[in-house]
Image 1 (cartoon, rainbow, N blue to C red):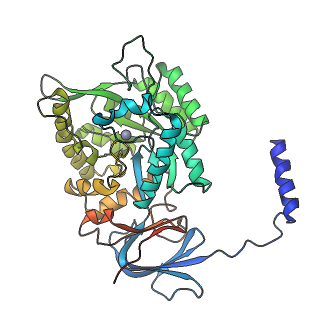
Image 2: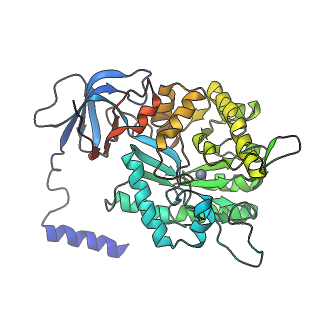
Image 3: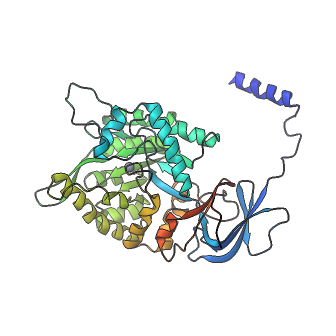
Length: 436
Ligand SMILES: [Zn+2]
């Protein structure tokens, strides 16, 4: 501590600047002309708006002339919206293709530096697609690598979104991969496996100490179809174990995301006080009512369950089909009841070369309006992340994360795949010039 303070003083003397002696340099002013503006909060879009950005903040929005000397970015032929937020990503995963070794090979054969190098590409891909913020929900065996990627982005070494990271994730013995190896062979696990409230709290403390912004907990694991044809999933932690994690996280001012498919794990996740349910495949009326009452978020990740179905006549193939069969009505029930919903893709589970925006059409097909779907990827998750008014909105005082698409996403939400402009923190990352 002492050493660090001295270092700061020496730097100040070498620069010949006494602290606070000079006014801050004038911040550059950029103006965006928006043909159509979806601000992330309002129920309708506005046309022909001028967004004034000073430094890394949005200063004003209106129809007046731009300030003299400002750099003007002409997006008058595009739809401008806040930088999008994906609340369920895995930057350390590269597609679980069975033909390429699936999930296991990534933990068994990929050196950490190789995984980190590919994570650098993942975050760049997200930013290119207009996702200026990610909640990355665990590294899948890559330890605290997400904390390093986040730092490299924040320090400007690599391009990427703002990151909220959850490090290793937590589950119980028998509650996460890798599995199916001879018992006498020790294989790495994709999450930190602990048992009992004491160990659970200790894992939470370790992960929080090492930089977790969120904790990710697996409340269900294996899934199968029972004799009555119903989707079942194995519960992991008891309510008591989860409560220890949630209590610890909340004490640090942090939150807990719980992967949960069906009861009883789902019920335990809600009774344990988790802040967000991930996937939520089977949400009955009681679960939805409890989520509304407790203010629990739902991050549904719909599209990913339509990928890579094994053959219909296999046990796995049956589970995959049953998952989507129950997921759709659960999502519709949640939308109707007013559960708070955050857009999430589970990208990494599928290839980073596929569009993350492929989630939007499913949300709309299953009951959201395009505007609701857009807000679930902008102002709503900003609220979940404790960044209301700062992220996911184009409004005075917000951080200048701004994107644009060439079409009208309110007519066809697939237009969100066509991102032509990306600004993060007031700096342009991507600008495709328009042909007129
Ligand atoms: Zn996931």
